[in-house]
Length: 457
Image (tube, rainbow, N blue to C red; front, side, top):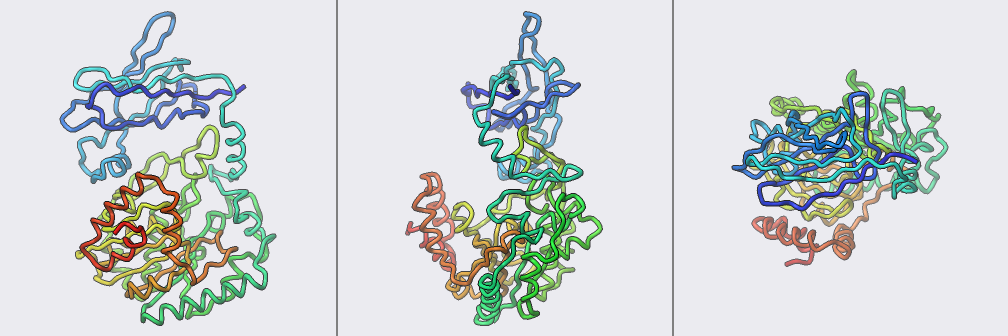
């Protein structure tokens, strides 16, 4: 038998409450109980003009009802950015978060909040001794996580066989090397056709930069090293493995509980990319000197696979999410997503076209403020020639990830087909947002091809 949490949300009583979340404890996950009591974390947003008071936990102990007041004691800039789409600096609801311990660790309690002097109850929480419904699924998820030293988590049992790549047990065969060579040469030719300086960014995996926290020994030759052996100067490859591993603050460049780099890591890669493209990285760095960073607990894509979930303090840029302020966003998930940014006040008026993967998103927090036009295509580095010819960008970037290198990207990608496949299975909500995106983007004819792919004109 194991402990897990059951959470039942209560229907809202009126319109004074805008949004809320209980981060811990989590549904179907074991609660965190220490000598200090039951750990609680979450946030509450009231509508403008509503006076928000303290949080309340109601439970029974010794046959008597107890009301425990919980103060709002935690700034949540991430909530202000993500939920309200606002700048958190000086925002009146910035301190919307709470972190607390219920000393008695009740087996059941109700959580509520005071709004305009009245208590609005949010949810019933029960701590139960039983087997969670998702036990098999949880075990399968936990098998995808390696616990390294110092709280560092790493990926395991993934489709790219990350461990086997790192240890050298899995390598590219002759056909794979030929495909990589064709891709590298193809990118050179495509960039030359539009007279655009280009670069291929390889986003490092954590184990490559922080091997001291990784339990496996690096192999004599890896897939990553096989590909680097094919590269010539004209391929304009930016190997962030070497770049980040050489930095004295390298532990600040990756998220302990996630497979991706931090915003600091993305910034280091961005500045190196600009230099690789022949731009003035120092000027761009100077333009970002007013940036502010904050630290908050973060579960990540690895910490969330564990039961109970594991979080670690993580540093983030205090800025809107990567997709915010896009003049076009088709809202599709993963491969096939298109984001377009236009900023007449950017450091450079140049245009940038990026064929990237998930590691590109934190880079967009910086790139969209540096270039007059940025088009991002989520393609994992695969290139669509027709998009390059349409955009004729001043600069062209491809971005892949080290663990993806076992499957060479190509230059025959067709974005329209990827979008059509996603639209065929998408939800009505995404379709509605696609319609809104088409309307917002129509002012610039350069954006219309991306609208046409949604078949909404």
